[in-house]
Image: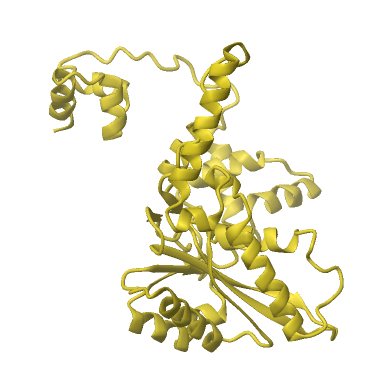
Length: 339
């Protein structure tokens, strides 16, 4: 079937190498498949065995040692030094690992949790499709006590759509904030994705019940993996590295709320976001992005016409940023890196 599909694509004008990439088959594999069953395998391979290859007896000693009662619960990295302390050298750690893999003796035996899968990819092509939220600490005047800042950001526009500061961290505050944001925006949140980390307030019963009632799809990071929630983490870094961020603790809850209100106003209306071609989150969220970038493009075009000798190629890219992806799949990340 793969041979037929590739042949059809080539007949339609596609390059064979590109067609192989699409179906996930190496070009050499395709050529080998096309050979008749009676074709001679002309691969030569090694004509002699490696001079440093273990003998069957040496290989058996490696297996016997690794599975002996005193060593069977240790890794080769621990076995080899202990053997050396006894004046014995059977093989290197890498050889131990290779032999054990070939003998199918490298399986984990202890009861352990299965690996946690990466979060599902979510793509936003417009506002209010994918939100991210998290909670961060704000220092109070009392040592060991903090105020808790709740921030909800739209990943497509980077606009802070909701925030709150409280004296405690709870799922009820998070649930009320999300519901209040939807009411304020007049938004029907059905199928809206709300991404967060694995904290208690994010996965609490009140929070999940509110999301289910509103029709919001919850999404969660892997445990202890901050990279799975990059938009909220980046926003908190911007917040705490502002020159205006106080070096002293906040004297009261009201002071903390006033400072955050000023930050949110600046971030949404004045901050030129580097990932958005340096337009503000509000301009992108409310549809003013195209006009702003078009004016910049016109200014650049006029400057190039006035002094063409100062321009070696195209003008700066002022095209609007397209879709935004949260936790892209591996292939998508690889293609983004190539571009």
